[in-house]
Length: 375
Ligand SMILES: [Zn+2]
Ligand SMILES: [Zn+2]
Image (cartoon, rainbow, N blue to C red):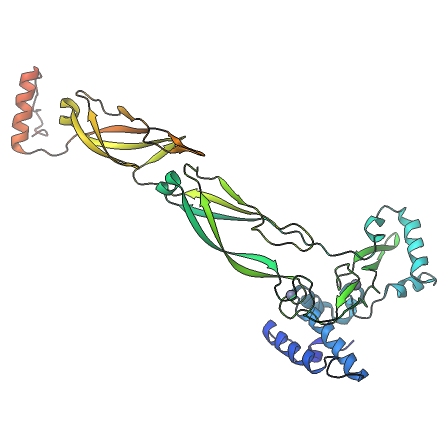
């Protein structure tokens, strides 16, 4: 096997971009359509394909850099042929080989192997994202426009992995069986394992020219915009499921998108079930005398009567001014005001005089204190 970097005419440390560019140039130059009948150039074309197959895949490239040619079977497509191993067992071709294999393992591991070439399936994975929304939006509902990445079927090859108009040919690595066998030397002797052929992903067929957009991975990452309807009354931590908006699968279902809603904390309000709580500061005088005030609720300003003699911590319920029930727009929780009676830290001289008079009127004797700390 020749040096894969040399085949593509790039340096060992070449970037993926350089590799891709060089591959495109060479694939174009040696393409069978242009070099009809020239066997040498056809071979060259295959070499370029193989080199790109390895060097364009970060994992395979690393393996190649580490093990180079010595990695033979594991690398696949590098002259490995399961029949070579069969002959190693005493000849008889692939069938005899599989007989030995089955006798040895009693058939347990054969389920997959005996199926032969199969369409590759890649399940569409679910995606979960977190979206933060404002407290008010959780009360009234909102619509989000999310921009997020997902993996879609390649639009150039429509998920086939083949460059448009490319011929589909039998996979050389597995001779069209979709399977390769791997022999490992162990203490118990030779162990044989059957693996899905990674060149054709078990399909037994590969495109003559790989799709240049997805490099035959059949899918590629795109940024999608998704509109998400957030219902009124949603709680922080709940997820909205959008069917089939996750990653797209190959011969398999598409994944779903889960948008997990995180409601930002509000400066003014907190929520318990469908009730909204807020603190209302009032003065001592309002607490004693009572008052009619305007308070903020998520539904707008609301006139509220503070009864005379209201204590600190008293709760006043404003019916129906809370969060709409999820899925039941007409029903709402309540808004609960918690009274915070402010005690003034500083008062004017005149206020002090009035408080002292008030004390006298209420029969309370105020002692200025010997230390003089008071007043
Ligand atoms: Zn493609
Ligand atoms: Zn194959």
